[in-house]
Image (cartoon, rainbow, N blue to C red; front, side):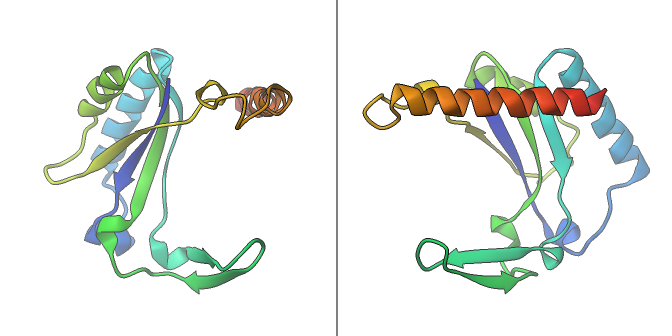
Length: 146
């Protein structure tokens, strides 16, 4: 099972404050443990919403763009991981060890897999295309790391 772990933004991250040298080192060690265990597939911190944009769709191909910053920090994401574990509980166990200070909030959400969709919604030929695309992207990401 794959999970996206969303690290919620706070006033500090939205103000553009960088983590301390110590926090980066701790997080690096944590990420290394997850990578060595084969759990971590990806993970990044995000710049503040002031450097982003939000698109609101009014139909296919028709979007209104609103430049950041965005007012509600409690609804923003400051970083993420994509992890692969055998269960939601294992994902919780791993992320519970993350070196966050008191008050940090993290959300864990399972990622849809091709197998999660019945064939009347995702026909086998479309499922095969999706699987091939995901496999290709995974191979390219692995090659880029070398």
